[in-house]
Image 1 (cartoon, rainbow, N blue to C red):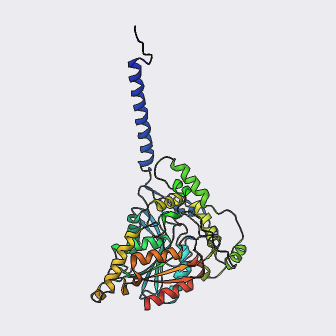
Image 2 (image 1 turned 180 degrees about the vertical axis):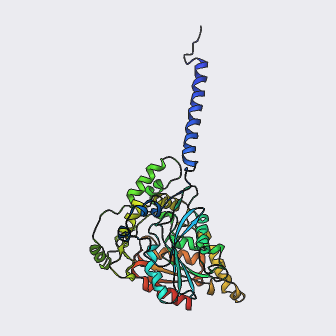
Image 3 (image 1 turned 45 degrees about the vertical axis):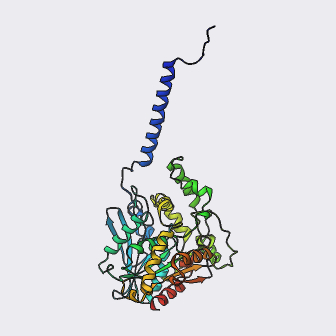
Length: 405
């Protein structure tokens, strides 16, 4: 009895397999090209090129972040694009380099910088790539290599000496704190002392929600344009209020913050409503207004923000902090007193008691594990993540006291 096996003709089956392999290969190739091929332009220009040329002098002055709002401004052209730098204060004063957080440009540090100048220090601050008036490189991850390169470019742009042994004090805020730690482990001889204000680098990954993991995923499962649009919506201030309402919100007795599992947490309403540049007189401008302006006009911001979340020293960087701890320990030894940089073998941590982003209990615990009990001094202020904006004078006093100790 004959047995018949019903099925596709052998040649037809082979053709289907070949077509399937070709289809999968083509899909993977297109996905790889769309993800890995660099954009045509090596950098996205900042509002310096895309906005300011179309504004009158009065319109420019009315911006939340006018380009000349701080003294000593300069535009530094580099192979990575333009960098906005401000430098002022007594030329013979001790030098202080300040680095801002992940979202608001260096304007966030303006009041702190001005307080330090009043004390006789010379300060320098700059906009990270993709923030404020600095261009955004498009063909490189925003990791410590890029940030280190930017720092060195900024230092080299000054007419004064900002390099060599014990060249400057370094203050890092939020993301700038994580960058400062990573930078210092390579250039410890240059950094006379290190102050971390609500500094990143040791944020625990357990605080990253599944939504954030999806939004900042590099798996390629979701198109980048979709992720960028979702992040833009997430960062956009939810409501527009007057400066007066925002100012009242800052001085209210705030409820204890609810710790949200957002890797890009804004720091709460008191952070969004904190006022900047009050030391220059006038009502100041709010964080939310500067962020809204940046979202609207800094076309490289979302790219820079997302790449920083993915690659910058923000989460669980124990290795960097342990390396710093070793450098500090060496300088606390009797024979280490002659080593340049990190004088005294300690760093200063300034934290906010109600900060929903940098949880002070966790940071002190984790810093003790990697720096040692003798490797740092921690000071707690009654405020949130807006600490450098609302408590600028106190932070300046603490830093100056630490340097003079």
